[in-house]
Length: 126
Image (cartoon, rainbow, N blue to C red):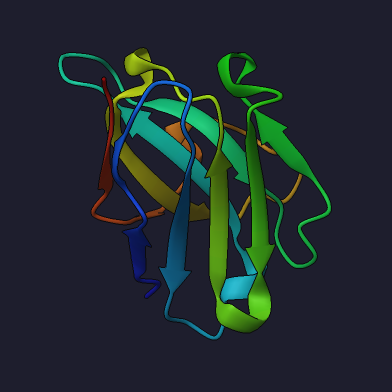
């Protein structure tokens, strides 16, 4: 069983930055693709970014965040990070990390992921 814990959320002004962390507790951690998702009030959950297992040499981003968000992983710390820059008010949401064994291609589809964290709130407001 893989447990995920997100941290790093909070309030930030438009144009500001935040770094989210997703920590896991399992020796099998390096075998999992890790994804970040977000869900705003009244909206469906959407994929933001994901990073491949092991070395994390492959990444994928939603079009809305390309060039502003960066995902990375540190397997020694069992942690994946999401650096978010130039944040916009519309990106206010609960951000979740998730883990899945995606062997062929990276995906931002939530159905591909088996384990989910509890989420961390990100509020972008002036």
